[in-house]
Image 1: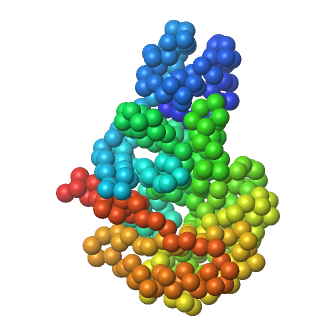
Image 2: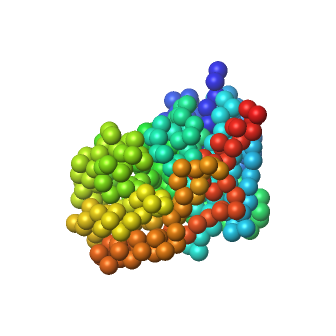
Image 3: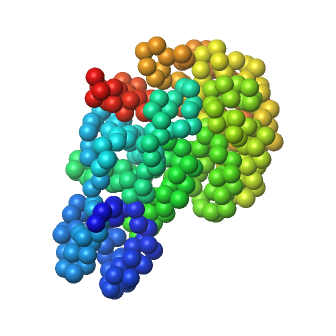
Length: 354
């Protein structure tokens, strides 16, 4: 019998499963507390759970499906983890230190099919979705790393911006959100969680209808269809004419601010012309739009793209500000390690094949 990660079950799902297998309803809360509050690493450590229930859990579930392959630590406190899954696939997870707390960036797929030309994640095509348990386990592994340091630190913020397109693994991603947000467990506030999408318009409607307080970020990176299609092939399926109405629906439904991610590529999308087009595109949404300008991290030695000059970044920023668009140049983390998303994984796979 194949065992699955117990971290893939929401509290309601765990309760139903245990009741269906002859256990009392209250057992679910006990198990949940041991998993997420006391954070045990073996079922046998759940000392107030009866032996029959422990045996049942051990027969059907596991606590560890991720094995740490590599851990890189940056001078700024960023820690990048490379995890090996049970099928031998590799994924990345990143811990970042901010003034407001500790943030973890999680991966949702093994590889990515979106095909953004500037992204290391897309160098290796998607082979499968991660299960909900595999996504949750990334948070748990980082939290265990913090627990072992003995400083009493906890993961306070989560960004779903790692390898893969979260909305292409929608159900598992939503289960993950409910699990880490549960106030009876990790208790990571919904407003401290951000999900990023490259623009799957149909899923943006579905996400809005969930009526949860989780933040949404759109990987935009270009203000017109011609340029966006050139650097992001997803724009062929969901051009701006489809994407922007979905965003309008989200804003109307939730009345929540939305972040637009914009990686600045030298002499590609960093001119004043693109800044003015972006301001125009977001003009009627400016009160709920927030632009995150991202300096580019070259993916490999002979990258087709280069980082925009500091002067170009500041000029782009100033143009947006003068047009009334809220924006910021994102603070960089882990620049002295494999900073670009998917870069460590790609490097490790090449090393293995060499």
